[in-house]
Image (tube, rainbow, N blue to C red; front, side):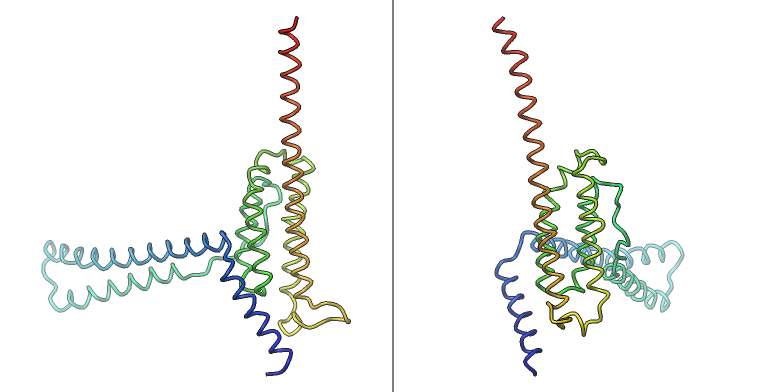
Length: 237
């Protein structure tokens, strides 16, 4: 193993250990969803195993016994149902092609879903950044839901999440794997550029969240001041 490959291996191993030791709430939620999914699959397999033989036996009572045909048909029907259940459970969903630019309220949820589809093609450190971004989007959702689609904050969120973030991730994924960790023209590697870009976007989402919160606080203070001037001045009169 040469020095470059050893350094890459140690970097990935270190990232994996750090990820296990500092597991985020998003990762716990993802693992919980997978667990619930497979519990439902197991339940469907059990139901199919019980229901299909009962249905075939009941049919035999009404239509007459089938003998050897029935003995063969029952396990075949059960195995076929198992195969169908496992096929649909393990089938990969298609990645969203584009993010909805016009649906500002649904943009954070669609962006989180899109990021989930991109995880496997990205380095470990970038996956951690995607988790950080997804958590920020979760807290940003209520703010964007109340926002006018033509407001400056909505325009900024649309540009950041529906344009700049996909362009960054797609630009990295277009590169051949052999070039993703290779310094180009004496500069940083594409992998480092990706991680730095994701960090910048993560910071910008935090700034957007703070600005929208500041606007809400200002609106609340303005309303409170209006009520104070209207009713307290009236009481003095």
